[in-house]
Length: 511
Image (cartoon, rainbow, N blue to C red; front, side, top):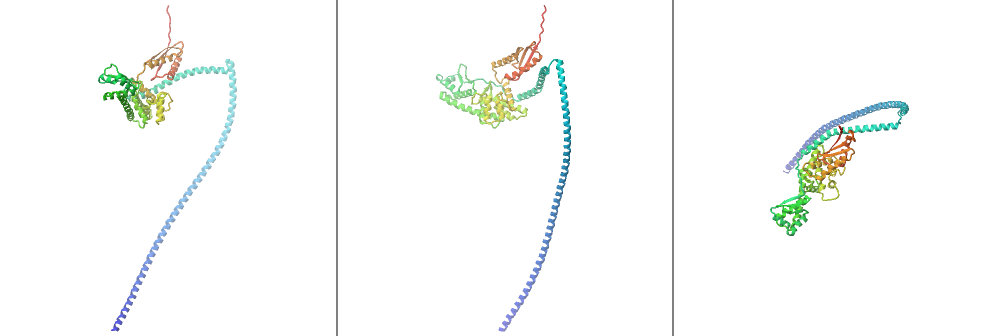
């Protein structure tokens, strides 16, 4: 039994050993096969890498050859340009040398010609002196005396010709420039329709009944005295039915007095303390109304960016008048006229409108220095950072300073247009008569003038001269000189026509 078991164990062991050797052989066979496959794959990969390396090398070689070829072509081009420049410089050098030789030749010729001209000049001068000596001997006059006589005759002839030329030139200028200027001015005036309103220095305050007059006067007149002291307005309470007259040259004060009276009568409480309170309240309301009016005016005209002080002064113009013309209406009208005229002349209409609106702000300034309103307005505008051309237009619209831009004469002309409209302003009769007398006296100051007549409201001056003292040429000279003196010495609206009349009378007596 034991032997049997041992034999079985030995048999099992021998079978395991055989199995082990068989497994190991199969494993070695697979390993060799895997090695061969790996070697074959490595060979393939090696060949692929070699091919890629060859392709890369060929590509680099091709790029290098291309780069070398390009560099070579550029070098060849540069060499050709250098060769061309050298050839051009050589050609120019030859031309310079040739020109230098020609210049030297010309200089030599010029020198010879100059010497010949000098000889000819000396010969001519000698002959001229000989002829002058002969002429002086024949005429009995020296050269200086003959020259003086010739100059005097030429002066008279030149003066006559110049006067005729000046008259012709002025007529031609009038036919062209005056016609064009009138067209622009007429179109400008026609496009601005403004009412002609003339203000007075009094305001009539209407009341419901005459009993209120007693309350306004107060006990022993204390109410009316307090009202006059607070407003600075003279209050006239007379027998005029249902009316009280407020008299003052300052329209702002009259407006404050009118509004204060209206509130006092409406409220019913009228006594000195109440009067002072109401007047102060109304004064603040008027100040606020000035600012609001200034803002509305600038918005209506399309003007932006004005300094608050300028806006207040524009609103204050509503309560001021100039020769009876409301200053705000006048300034608005000037602004519109300036904008239209600037557009016609190709200038900036916005700037012109701004200058036209501000040209009279000096009249409503709170300051009161000894300055004309134009200069004061220019100072205020400059202080408020307005442009230099606007400040110059404000300051020069009455010729107090020199005009430096085209905007200045436009403002001056539009100011005259607005003030000269029929009904726009009142003219004092004394100043009107004085202007006519000044015209006549200026003409009478000339010798030979017999009579003068200023007609057509001073727009024409007729001068009658004596025929025995002034001839026709002197009459033309007189009209010209008189026109110049009127322009320089007198102030007048529009233009003045000067007509010089020279008549010849032949008198005989039959006996």
